[in-house]
Amino acid sequence: MSASEDIVRPGETKPRAAGFMRAPWLAYDAMREEAGPLWQEPETGVVFVLDYALAEEVMRNHTRFSSFADRAAMRKGGLPEEAMKIKAEGWPFALTMVQNDGPTHDAYRKLVGPFFLPRRLKLMEPFIEARIAELLDAIDAEGGTCDFFPDFAVPLPVSVIGEYLGMRQLGDDKVKRWSDAFADEIGFLTSDTRAVEIARLTLECHKTMVALCNERRGGNGEDIITALANAAAPGGGQLGDPELLSILTQLMVAGNETTTATLGFAVLRLAQDPELFARLKAEPQTIAPFIEEVLRLDSPIQGQFRKAVGDQELGGHPIPDGTMLHVRFGAANRDPAVWGEDAGELQLGRRPPKPHMAFGNGIHFCVGAALSRLEMRLALGEILARYRTVRLAAPEENLPFRSNFHQRGMTSLPLEFE
Ligand code: HEM
Image (cartoon, rainbow, N blue to C red; front, side):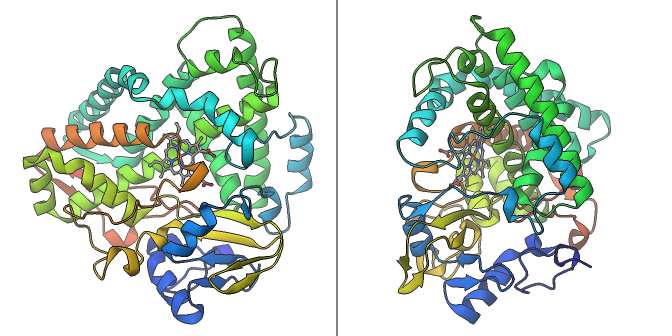
């Protein structure tokens, strides 16, 4: 059995083991007890940053702690040869946003930022509302019984980003398959067979995206692919294929599993607590603070890597050059020093002393935060307006979680809406 196939007991400090993401905060408590706010993973030396103040210090100092890391190399044993061969048939990797720092990061980010401004998002609202109604109508046609993931939480964000990018005609299933492949690669707890499959899917996705960009050069469509295919590159001229692929795949992947996971956690909380359901239904103004508390408590991205640039010091500890840190947003978001002794409880009236870190912090703060908040607000608003209650239709302890180093999310949530 490999480490990632081990099943952890609650609180066990094995972040690569299956089941770790069920209740990672128990493990964070154990890690803090063992080592304080900086806990080092024994097999890899990766340093977990577990309190808010240190997490903020790392996230806000990208010259000391860079976002660049060879993520494929983080996989135990590297990539299988067959996957490397398939990769070699594709395009070279370009640094644009999430793994980049400094002025070139800012320049690429400026290209993308305008798509997520309020007036642009407003244009997406009718599409999102129609899609929510369509998905819920299908659930109603089944008498209110569903698996919330395949029936709602997966297709909603996939179709929204597909529409926004201008690739929905390819089919939502294809976008989801590609998006999952990228997410699994970044999460690196994959078998060799899956690693090869991911390489194939990546190549297929890249070829399709390059073809779409070529078709749309000179066009005047409203979609993001057309806009970027015709945009000026930060260094002059048009964006090259590797840059386009880097930006487009980040947009495709980053918003899918994360929004899906958050919708799942939000509705699970409603199913667990009928009084909460009733309160949100009666007071729709509490939906937005509810979403923020779900993001804080359930943090669908539990953490991200940063790499020490030169010898550093953090919280009084030396951090040698090249050390990989994993800033655990999920731990910072429950740090009692910031959120108080009831840090682990959902409080609709909470006045956050600091912003939660579910969307990150600093120059890489999630560019799609407003889009995902809009999707979740509209989705939960309609669910609460349409139904009297929702029940969990499976034992809670059996709900399956994805195996991923960073992302936290369930894969199935059987429900009955009434
Ligand atoms: C609940 C939903 C979401 C969550 C929890 C989330 C979380 C995050 C986090 C934690 C980061 C920071 C990564 C880092 O510092 O290394 C990030 C960055 C990013 N997110 Fe999101 N995200 C969500 C939705 C979206 C959506 C809908 C999109 C786009 C359509 C998106 C696109 C991006 C991009 C492009 C970045 C990189 C920004 C940069 O490097 O400057 N995200 N997200």
